[in-house]
Image (cartoon, rainbow, N blue to C red; front, side, top):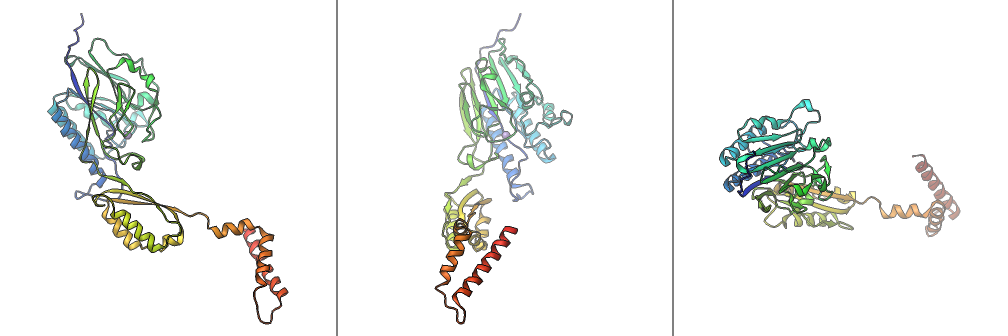
Length: 388
Ligand SMILES: [Mn+2]
């Protein structure tokens, strides 16, 4: 006789895409770590502390806990201590599912995540479809790590009726919307039998989004996407999910570094000095100051000459204030006068040149002689141009 499912409500914390070990820009923190790597650690630590204070019945990490297959010893140690703290202080299971970033290409490399399964109450699904059950909570959690989805090794997805709460965890790009990272396995929501589950915890998309009625991405904990600018205004955090019912509360973090996209500048006909001034005004106009932020400013239609003559010393001083200031310069590709000459065609240009030369007076030189000399030069230039 099977044990009847216990009728108790549960609260689950769902986070994903932590990307521990992510590094960008060449700023170092006081302890020698890359500043952005440290930022990601701080965000993870904040998330763990806040989850502990919520006392959930389980925590799910839906993939990309690490940014790479072989994270540094330092960040593995940091992660080990944070997961041990979470498992110990919540006294509840922590389920870790592998994402595309930490999944090795070759199975014999082994996953770094297996190490954490040595912590009491931490369960890891790194390579294949697995189901973890918790009788005392009436909870069954089925996990689809990246490798299981990418290898198309999906077993039939069915909820287990002996448990009151059935949760599915998947690291994949579900439907084509909101692509924020490459290398994810692609799936349609209907392939996950969504009606079977009380909740589907998704990882891979770095912004918090709901997919269908009972599935959601919690988003990343910091700005670690391939295109951080496109997601600059999105809050970073984790979800708290109540079962049954699947009511979700998003808990935004306070620690993630601010990413700012400034209004672009059209530099057409702008003198170097004026352009330098406008870049500085834009930079200093950032609400709350530029200090420590990650900022992008796009400038269109800049001629190479104007760019060379910008006040680079002043711009370096401006850049030093931000953690990173990216000037995205789109150079003018075609100079209008060259274009006009090209359109004119050879014969036309020669006629125009000779016509124009009639207004010149060169002492001791006949008009016809001048026309001949000019035609000769033009022929030489054209021959050189065709040879190149
Ligand atoms: Mn990711």
